[in-house]
Length: 416
Image (cartoon, rainbow, N blue to C red):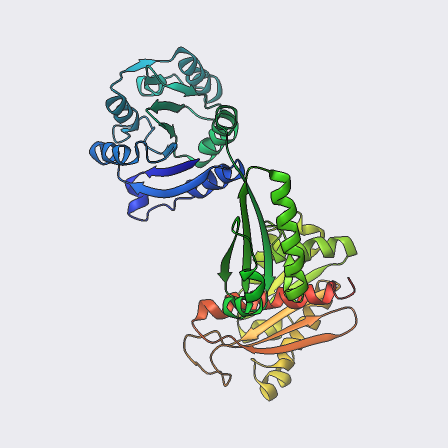
């Protein structure tokens, strides 16, 4: 099965909001064996919508449309559906009762005609009940293509996808299985990883595809297998993952898409009953933000001192002015002092510190642009490493954050 996802909204086309709905829908479809053929963003224009529908007719099995279901005049999706299917709008009494209960029972205000109009749907559509909002979803079939309309509000869209669309597609369609396995690697770039696994990649059978998903300092390797027998696909994937692990075991940090390095180190710290703090200069709190992005991080993350200014390093962290004068603020000695002092200040088992010259200009620093010192204070020692991450500034900060967590992971997993 193939699907096309269509987002409707001028606000997306002008960059006012970012389309996150398409990614969620594509992932949800992929899990049940439906391949996303393409994603399209179009304007709130009836003719544009009709032309798009006509082009997609019988080209794909599903067309999932988000947006344009609001109560205002610029939301034209329902009327356009009626024109495309040669249908008319009628009041759905179940939807009207739900909207009335939501407006008058929950929001405690009198329902207006605009609110009531949310209950208007094409007479021949299958209504998809929206328990968390006022705009119902719509399911209509023409020839070989099903057109599904969803509200653009993300939490409403997600509810309908999970509770209405996915169960209905699973029940009504015979689909192939799609099995994914994502291998997370850190510390080497895409080209180097590709070179190391070239022979392994060439040995993959036709039904297994490999995709490289690079980011600064990390590469995700996604294996995808398609076929009719799920158990055989999973067995084949596991076999090739095992042979890959034998080749690049030194840079693999996990095997699940959601198991980022932040999650991995967090789980390990929690398992060890250890705590960590950060003292950040050039990374500006980015490491702390990544650690606290994991739910439950309070179990092991004590806090951070973003000592961006030199006087903050001295007055808050207690870094010696003499050390700064002798070695400069961007130095191994200052990074070491920052890590040790924040570890003591927040009473933790581990601490990470960064100091560097991220750019974009040289400024008063003697250190080269892109130079970063990262210190990791452990219960027994302080490890300090020097890097030059080049430019631009964003790249330096990204790579310093990744490398810091990589150093931490290597340390806490070294006896595993």
